[in-house]
Length: 167
Image 1 (cartoon, rainbow, N blue to C red):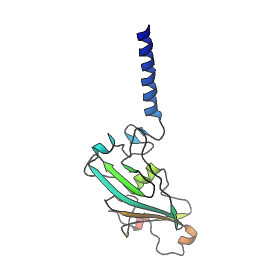
Image 2 (image 1 turned 90 degrees about the vertical axis):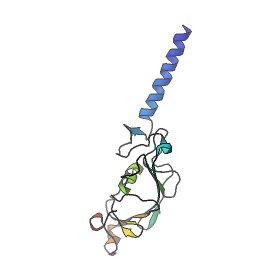
Image 3 (image 1 turned 60 degrees about the vertical axis):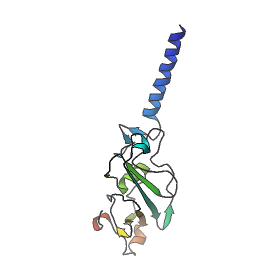
Image 4 (image 1 turned 120 degrees about the horizontal axis):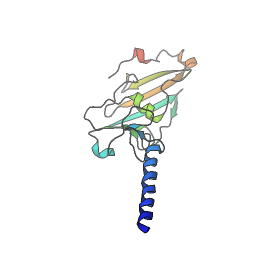
């Protein structure tokens, strides 16, 4: 009788653990970060062949938007585009030497919109216009700026993806 009770208890523990992994908050489904096509790192940092650091600044009408720590990090998944600390240092890590992670991917993981009603968006990477499909490179300095349409009409410096180039 005692053996069966132990097996039953272990069975419950295993079912609960599996349920938490599947339904836990903000995690992966089928190897990707929730609601994105950004892959989770199998084994975390240990299996990353690519490790890029980039700095991201997000501005809305000139005001800095805080980028939180641990965007793309959960107890059972680390998205290929993520943060560890607050302040905008991005980590792009992939199990392959070549990567295809973009600015749009990070915003998807962060759950922040790249299109905002009433705003025009400007993306600058290392001083050059870029698009949401720009592939991260090590040491990038990225600025994504949203300017309200009212103030954008008086500023000729605002660009859109159609006018910009991608790397």
